[in-house]
Image (cartoon, rainbow, N blue to C red):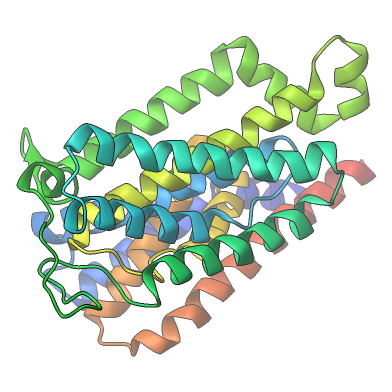
Length: 329
């Protein structure tokens, strides 16, 4: 009986907690279930979800990408500078950050796959390098419309309406970031579940030696995972800049822990027992609902990290208890 309850809690615990949290906050504040608030929750988790999808890819190949938060910050200030300083066209503004994200992923892959530095240490080093690069580039200042330049002049450009629409606009009554998030979750789920590359990612993460013996080019697959991680973090940076209308130098700092928590909560959604994009999405929903509800209850913002940490500990505890039992069986 005990094992049955543990299995049920592992499979459905995250979904039950999400439902209970929603009920609790809706009883505490009548505006919690309003359309505007729910849309705001989904809009806010869209950024976390994109970053968490990147972490999911690195987790699938039995790795870990700690550089995603710094990648978000870098791409956010690069986007802002291209519009505010250089007035570049939208297609360039959207393309360059994706290339930067891919390059960060390639750097991670070079250190991990070729140099053979452990993934946590390699991506930690890259996190600090990127953090230093973007703060040096901006001289520690955020970038915004009509900001004053070091020579005393005002910046010539500003965030365009077409770019801001990506983060603030609506399509068919839904916020654009929410639509992009849903499309991304569906596409990545199909990619991981029904394509050869997706299956190779999981096989590689499960047992690299077995994958190599079966003919899978393990190094190429692992490189792909880190490149995709960088690209999705860059998309998160794009959405962040489009949502707030400025380039914040520490935009990605809180997103690392939120995305990691979302990924590990996702392990247990419907008993998946592995990194998966559907679970990651529900993990992001849980984080978003908690932060929004606590804000509506006027809990001090500096206490939010306590809640994030507790969610992460709970997710890790449930996941590893189940995995330990599974191995023992």
